[in-house]
Amino acid sequence: MAKIDAEKGKRELIMSAALELFAQRGFHGAPTSAIARNAGIGVGTIYRYFKDKDTLIHELFQELHQRYQQQVLAGHDPDASLSRRFHQVFGDLLRMFIKHPAEFRFMELYYYSPYATSATSRLPRDDGIIYDILREIREQGISKDVPMKVLEAMAWGPVVALAKEHSNRNLVVTEEIISLTIQAAWDALRHHGKQ
Image (cartoon, rainbow, N blue to C red; front, side, top):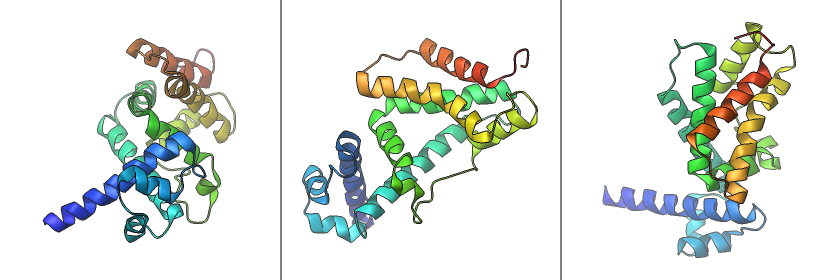
């Protein structure tokens, strides 16, 4: 059991060191030698846990994405109104991005990189609670009549912009600001007069 814990601990150490460097320097600015140095291990140790740097990047994204999905689902009430579910899910995500700015920077970097579009990427496309809520908003005629990708951009835009301001410029984000931001995203989606 102790050996398994030590192995798991070393893998997590590598992922933590990689996350920090990727968030600061980007993927190309963080070679495996720098990740190893940051983790306090030899470069060869990384390759005992990950086939290559690309595998490390993909697995780090998958782990973070899965954790975020679980945390959002933990607070989700499927019986609540669409408005309440939208506010809860996007509010919870924004709070996580604010609490973990390095994770936010990494996930955004990944999402807009060739890694997310490569054949080995398992980037979620049209599944999960967020997409279910947006589809429901559209199907019920609550939203403007725009393509789904536009709807996603309208929902995510204020959330990502605020998380960037916090992450890159140390903007202090209060609960009131989070609430106003999510309300602005909700208002952007809706037809006038729709709830």
